[in-house]
Structures are given as structure tokens and as C-alpha cells.
Amino acid sequence: MALQALLEQEVAGAIPHFSPRAKNCIFLFMCGGASHLETFDYKPGLARYAGKTASEIFSAEELAGFNPEKAVEHCRIMPPVFSFAQHGQSGAWVSEIYPHLSRVVDDICFIKSVTTDSAIHSVGEQLMHTGHMRPGFPSIGSWVSYGLGQANRDLPAYVVMKDGISTSGDDVFQHGLLPGRYRAAVARVEKGKPPFPHLQAPPGMTRSAMTEHLDILQRLNRRHRDRHPGQPQLESRIEAFELAFRMQAVAPEVFDLSRESRAVHQLYGNNGFSRHCLVARRLIEQGVRFVEILDGATGRKWDAHGNRGGLEDNHRSNAARTDQGIAALVYDLKARGLLDDTLVVWATEFGRTPFEEANKEKKPGRGHHHKGFTLWMAGGGVKGGMSYGATDTFGMLAEENPVSYHDFHATILHLLGLDHERLTLQHNSQDVRLTDVYGNILHDIIA
Image: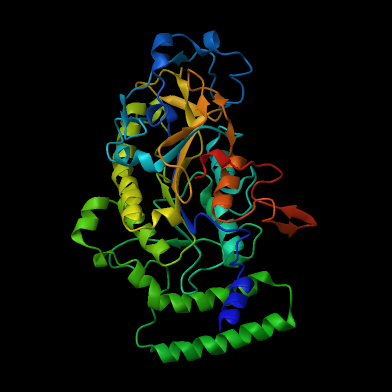
């Protein structure tokens, strides 16, 4: 029996390359480009240069590559719009807009020197999810499910919860070149509604009748597949039918938040994002490998331009929506003994410029900035209570230990027991991988 279980795991690709530090990952993505200067990268020195133009401080080369629709040379340096304070034993600097998150900073590793290759929303989202500029490549969640398989055969390995469609569309969390079985299952968390479409049996149909119906359908599908080999979409459809049938008995219970105590609901708060965080914890408890939550997808809510309501109002409202849920997730995982095995990642497509946009907005805003910004990780074998890397005095350039998005992806895969150089798919006689031909593991942040 043990041998049979191992063989089944091997067939599913569920054996990692080496001993993992984390068994699963929760990926929190803030759509629109959260400002590192108003969240976790405290730069009080900006106040000394307030009012100076970008061209007075930075070279033409340093100012190249930003949003091509807007000139930045005459933009003026702007200090952080929020106050910061140190928290925890680590003394981490955190913005005033994160009162809940500030209580769990000793479990967090802030990576403050991240760089990416584009300051365009759609491209930035693609890069942070798939490692490639062009659409059509697998997302990191699909790569993880491809490498590790399903830990629970009754639930998808990869689940996405979102509050809308992001700038880059649903391509950012799809399977791309991989077989369809590695696509994300997009779930909704609404009281009284099934988490996935068509999950409920038709009225009057018994479980035994459904089993018989599915058996007949699958026999026909397999017969067609055997007569016409080389149809991965049909194989994926067969597997999807079988998984959907098994999910009918399991998924409604996992997504039923009424099973949680009043204290847990009070801990997480009561909005859409908080409920997504609570469901994420319940999903990883059931063995789901990779859970992604997209926040602010519709309208790029974190896109803090002056003509979109201004930086201060934008980030204060966005943080208020997400702060409690994120902090509760970290705290709850740790209290249940799950944080050691669960990697929590907070990410965004890029940061914001240290200068105000010079296009006569009514309220101060910051432009897109990809040359140095902050992401963070917690749990899953990562050192808590530390900051890795740094930007310069202005928060402009990654100065100390620059971290590319390839390094970021390589490190996540490593923590999950996957070698990013070995996790490949041959396509058109080429080995395709998440990190392309790049990527260095951030060993210094691993406990």
C-alpha cells in the first residue's frame, strides 16, 4: 500500500526536487503598484530635497525607462505622505496605514531592493506572475502545481480569488504552455453561492445517477482520446470532469465560513478581502498547494496617480481594506502551527517614484517605478524580523543586494522544494522555465 501511494505521488509529480521548507504558498497581489515609500521603505531623507526636480537629482540614464506617456524630468521630489514608526523586536519601519500588520513584523522578511523590467501595468503583472513579458507563459501557481501535483485529490492544486479582472487580464494566473490540468481554479466567496460554477448537482439527480452519468461520459471521452492521441485539451477536460465531481462533496464545506468561530471572524474582519484571506487559510489546511488573492484588480486600485484620487487617499483606503486580513492571516497561521509550512508572499507589479507627477493634478500622486521597490515574505522557511536589500536615499534605485523578479521566483520555488533550473517544460524543442535563463536564490533570507 505504501509503495502504491508513492507511485501515485510520482505519477502526479508530487515529489519535490529536495526537502521543502514550505508545503504551500499564499500569494497576495496588490494590483496597481503599491508605493514602497508609503508602506515599508521609510525614506525621511526625501524631505531635505523636497521641491527639487528629478533632473536636478538624477541622471538622464536613471530617469529613462519609466512610463513613456509621461515625462519625469521636471517632476519634483516629494517626501512620504504618511508617518512611520518602528515596531516589534526587529524595529521594522512600517507606515501608519498598517496598524494591524505592524504587530506581526517579527514574522516578516521585507525585501526592499526588488527590480523589474517594465513600468507598464500589464507587462509588470505578467513579469511578476509568469517571469516573461509576453502573455501565454504559465503563472507561478501553475508551475508549482506542475512541480508538486495535488496534495488533496478532491481539490484543485491552484486556487485564485479575485475582486475583478486585472489590467493584464486572467492570463496572469493561467497555465499557459502547460497542460490544462495546471490552470487556476477561480473561486468566488459569496454567502449562499457555490464557490465554483456548476458545482451543484442538477435538481432531482442523485449521487449514484451522477456517478453513472459521468462514467458513461468519461468512457466515451477516453475512447475518443485513444483513437486521436495528442489532444492535451481533451485529456484536461477528462480530468476536470473527474475533479469537479469529487469537489461537489468537499468544496462547499471548505468555503463555508459559517463553520468558523465568532472570534475568528472578528480577527479577520468583514470585507471581501478578509474573507478571501480566511478561505485561503482553510484551503491550505486541506492541502491546496498555491492560493492567490488579487486585491484591487478592477480599476487598478493601488495605482496612486494624482488624477486617480491622489496618493494619500488611495493608499489609506487600500491599506484599510487589506491590513486586518493580512495580519490576521499571518497571526492565525502561526497560532495554528501552520506558518512554518506555509509561505505567505505580499507582492505588487512595481513601486512608485520618489517624485510627484508634473501634470497638474489636483492631488499629489506618484508615477510608476520599477527600479527599486519592496515585497515581503513570511513563514515557509523565511527568516522573520529582517529586511533584505535597500534602495538609495531617495528610494529610487536598488542599491544594496538588488533582487530581480527572477530571483524572487527562484526563491519561492526553492522554499517549496523545487529547483527552478530543473523545473522545465519542453516546448518547440526548447526548455521553458519560470525564471527563463536567470534567477539566483536569496539564501540570506532563508532560516
